[in-house]
Length: 54
Image 1: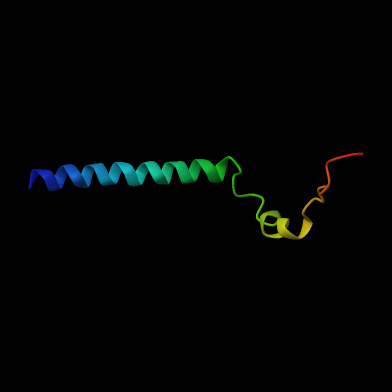
Image 2: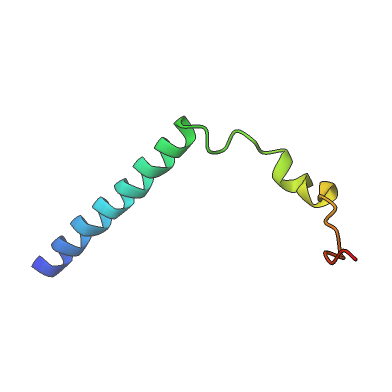
């Protein structure tokens, strides 16, 4: 029974840690740019294919 209490406490600490990390990332602006990642495929930069100059 004591193992169950220990595991419950550890799981609550881990869950609260993930919640704190999520709240911190939202407040620091990690999720503000939700438009450009989906459209980066359409605006790829052209790279030269032949790098050897004669």
